[in-house]
Length: 125
Image (cartoon, rainbow, N blue to C red; front, side, top):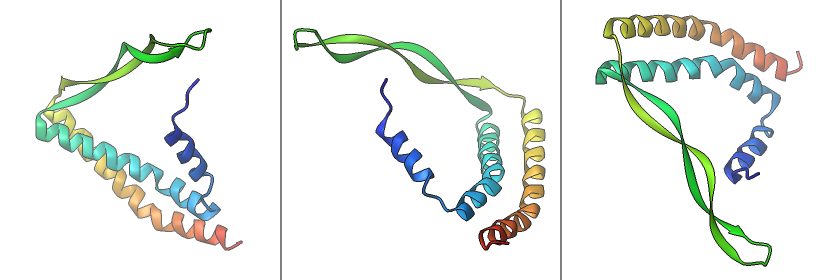
């Protein structure tokens, strides 16, 4: 099994966060998700269609070793991501954007209290 080095490095760095940083990251996670969804929805409205990612099976050519210590090429199954345009209903998409913006405002109003709680917890109290 191969694990990309970048994933291992990110996992190691994630463990380096202080408890306060981890609390702040958790407190702002939903806002980050909403910001991503709001951006996607706005882009869909601007384009007039959505873009959907799908996985498609593929074969990759890789270098393999043989028992006699020689190397050869062989194939390995994999997946590749393809992006396809998808029709949208602009009115439905606008309602979705309005609902996302409303939810974002609610979370934004609650955020200062959540951040204060993170700071208090980190200060030991």
